Amino acid sequence: MNDNKNNNRIELRGVTVQLGDRVVLEGMDLAVPEGKVTAVMGPSGSGKTTVLKAITGQVPISAGEIRVGDVFVNQLSARKLNDMRRNIGMLLQNGALFTDLTSFDNVALPLREHTRLPETLIRKVVLTKLHAVGLRGAAELYPRELSGGMNRRIALARALALDPNIMLYDEPFTGLDPISMGAAVRLIRQINDVLGITSVVVTHDVTEVPRFADYCYIISDRKVVAQGTPAELENIDDGVVHQFIQGLPDGPVPFHYPAPDYTRDLLERH
Amino acid sequence: MTTGSVTGKLFVDPVKEMGRAVLFLFTALSRMRFGKTQFLETMRQVYFMGVRSLVIIMISGFFVGLVLTLQLYDTLSRFGATEALGTALALSLFRELGPVLTVILFAGRAGTSVTAEIGLMKATEQLDALDLMAIDPMERIVQPRLLAGILAVPALVLVFNVMALLGGVVFSVFMMGIDGPSFWGNIQATVALGRDFMGGMFKAAVFGFLASWLAVYFGWSSKPTGEGVALATTQTVITTAIAVLLTDFILSAFML
Image (tube, rainbow over all chains, first blue to last red; front, top):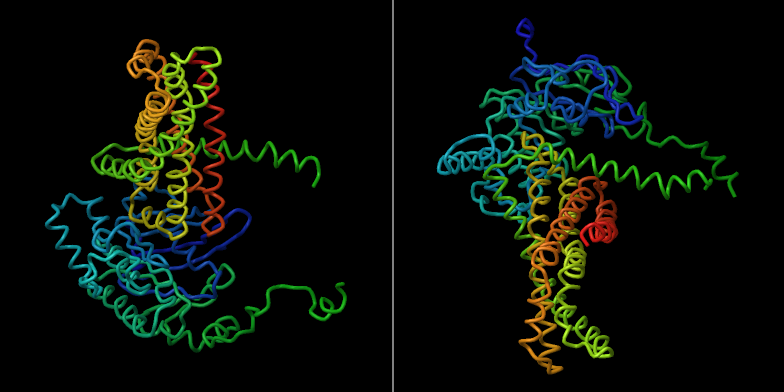
């Protein structure tokens, strides 16, 4: 698809994802511009993570198409899918480090698996990656000996090991203290700009988004409800967007789980 | 519950589960690859699953040997046939007790830890992480454990048998004063290397395969929660025990 001359590195068109009886995404259109940091926001359970899983081909889509670079994810054979995944780095929610390997071996794993580099060179690459996330000194420690934030930074180094040209982040800020949060925000921006790659960040952390994102999507109830630069989003006059950006407990996204009428429930039962 | 749903619970669900386990096995077999990494990982698993089970296997083997000899001695002496003690002990060990008891101990010691390990890897997204790194978890996680079970269990059965014979000697020769050379001589004269000993080893390999297959399957298919993993480890032990005893009967019927 070299005739695809727009500047979008990743494009979802009319993507529907159905898991069992549950429709998780419905007719979703989403474009990720080349070289930019795109944030995908939305309330918990709105299908944000599924967007990432669809891009990496971890969940099958039942309608629509997903383009990553020149390839359409839903048409790939298992081997081609693996080739594509080698160019994508993904940071999973809790890092997902291998607990029986040291930090060093965690980062070295993709290199040992997919390259024929000699061990001396692998060591240099791994130390460079660990240094970039500030944890070269923790190379010989196991994941259980490190804090949650550090685990995630090691996982980031691992995701970067093969020099991907796309980075996907799944909730990178959850459970971080303010210092780690600041470090994470800066790292995401720096990695994107210094390496000249394309990044997608899934998050529900509204306040942090303007500090790193070039463009945002807000997902709610299986669809994109708003998009724009962080500044544009502040001014959008939409119920869900307003509620989400302002962090209001009740609104179009209800505070209460659907239930029978409160008074009747209290009075009539028993 | 209606009669239909009870029947479903009792018969249909286990059959479904079996189908899924077989599909899982075929997927795992079809994605097998053989290289240096796979070899090294398999050896590492042989260590974790096999070598680390040695202590429990040795202790159990020794005491099984002791008590078995005690019972056999008592029974045989009623017929005045205590010279057959060594033969009876060796035959029952090599053919049945060695493989069956070893694999049930193995399922409790190594099978459960494999199930829990894979279940936790699933819960903490480690399996997803492998997938995303374009490393097939079937080939990296499942294959080594599957092969390690087939390699480790026969070796453990060998150790179990040796320890049980030792227990037998301790009881009969040292405690009951049975003639040592005739104890060993009778074993050598009557136990057939092929049918009795190798037959038992063949059983051990089959049981080892069953135990590791069920262990990885239940780990792989467990719900990624604390409760799910706990249930999966229980299922591993129970299902392995039943599958082994059933298979044992079938194999014995064909081998005798």
